[in-house]
Length: 399
View: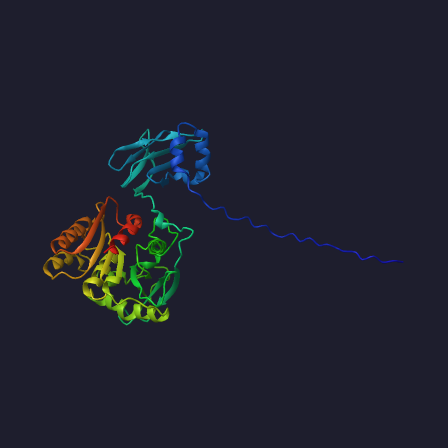
C-alpha cells in the first residue's frame, strides 16, 4: 500500500477591524452655492458630516473661510438671527424630514452669538460665531528644495529662578548651520505650538525660518521654542500655571532664567557657536509672551537686541501697562521692535489691548525707537501673526 502525503490547510477566522472613519467637515463654501439650487446634493453632503442626533440639537455649525453653515431639524421654517436682532437669513428646507440649512458669506472679522428661531418664535438652536480668516503665506508650507531644520526636544525641571516648575522646549538648528561661524538666535515664548509645522492657523515658525534662511533674508539662526512652566503639582496636560508670573511681571527674572539656565544648556548640549552681538539675538511672543519678550529686552538690551511680538499684553495684569510711560521717561535703549496690534483685541477689567498697544506705539515713536507697528482688524490670538511672521522677520533683520 502506498501512502501519499496529504497537506491539510486550517483556515482560522480572524476578526476584521474596520478603520475608524475620519470625520470630515461639511464643505460650507460649496454648500453656499448648492443650497436652493441642488438641494438633493446639498442634503447628501450635509448628512455625510452631520447626523440626525446632532442636527436635532440646533448646534451644528461650520465656518469655512468667511462662510457660515448652520443646520437644524425643525417642524416649521427657521431663521438665523444675531444676538442684536439682525437677521442673518432664512434656512432652506432640504427634505421632507425637516432638515433646514443655511450657508452664507458673512465677511471677515465677525464675533457674535446667534439663535435659530422658528416662524412661531421658538428657539431651536444657536451658537457663537467668530470669523477671522487669512490666506496663509507660501513661507508657511514645506517646499521641495528648501532645507528643513531639525527640531530637538528637551525638558527642563531644575530651574533655580523658577523652582518647582517643569517645561518643554524645542531647539531648532537649520541645515545650513556651520559651527565655525557664529549663528543668530531667536527665542519664541509659548514655543511648542509655534513650532508645530502642521498646525492649521499656527505660526509654523520653523518652516518660515527654513524659507527665510534659505533665501538669505535671515542669517543662519538657532531657534528656541520654549513653553512657560508647569507647577510640579499640576495634573498632566493642564495649562502652565506659572505663565503669568513669568510673562506678565516686570523685572529681570525671566531674562535671567533664559540667560543663565536655558541658553547655556542649549549651547553646551548642541555644541553651538552663537553670536555675542545683541543685534543677532531676537526674542518673540504673543499676548503675555509679547510682554515677556519686551521685558527681557528692556532688562537686558545687552543680550536681546530684537523683539518680535503680537497682541501684546501691555495691560494691568502684573504691571506691563507701565511700559508706555517708562519708554517715554527712560533713555532710549538699543532695541529694534517688530510689533503687531489688532483693532478688535480684548477689552476687559485689565485694560484695552488695542489702546495699550496704541500707547506703546506712540511711546516708541516719541522716544525715537527703531520700531515698526503693523495693525489689523483681527482678534486676540496668533492667526494674523501667522500670516505676518515672514514680513515681520524680514523687516527685523533688514537693517
